[in-house]
Figure: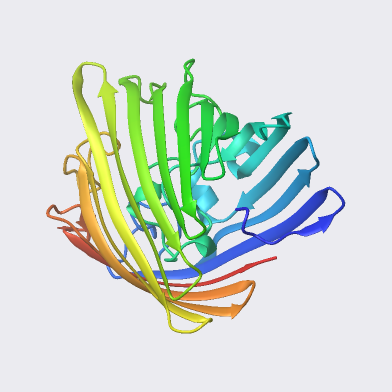
Length: 341
């Protein structure tokens, strides 16, 4: 989100972002929602995925951010949050606790460190989100400690309410870590962890969740860019065997000109019951892969037009066709116009 341009007035910065899209799923979901996704998930309608206003404050020793959001992404991803918390993309305040070491502590609703993709589509090589970010937190709530270790290494420590929640759903707290390594200006390596008790009133059987996330980003500013993500997690359950999930993806992009580029993605997601006890068709767990291509056109330095085709497939019948019969595949076409200021 820090890549969105802002107008600075004294210590205050103000910006905004609008991500509009039209998607068509050839399986024609009966409820108008592409299954297993919260980003750009509506079928056969022109709508807004995410629109927000970004208000920031920054001084030498303090920083704060308030980002109220709206759109189909907010409706789907924040549906379990109560009241006005449904519209909190970010809301946090930070204090510099060591001027010499540049150590900050931030408290509130924070952007998630997990995976190589966020909800902000303009920052990524493809318009739609991979399975990876759709199955980990897009946001976290709690305390973040930022500790620069050297010019190339940064460490972050999190004390959190839980796995993508603003209002806590149990009495326990969770711990997250993030380690960044930037060997040069073109490359980033990142390792994230999460440990926390996930039991709640809705899922009293859940116990400790363990998660490891690794990703790599390459961006030389030239013709070729790439990123890859791999993660795995384990979910303990009361009276049941520990279940697990993992995923891997690779995304590459080639720029033909300064304004036109083509991106491609290949990925696989495999869950034996950690997050998905059953697929929408009743099959235990959820396993699926996808391939896709996305044409990107920079209409302006603050506007991006994109067209993406994506094919989903599985060894199991985890999708429903247009007649609501189980099938093993799905095809999605999406067009998007995104602008920021």
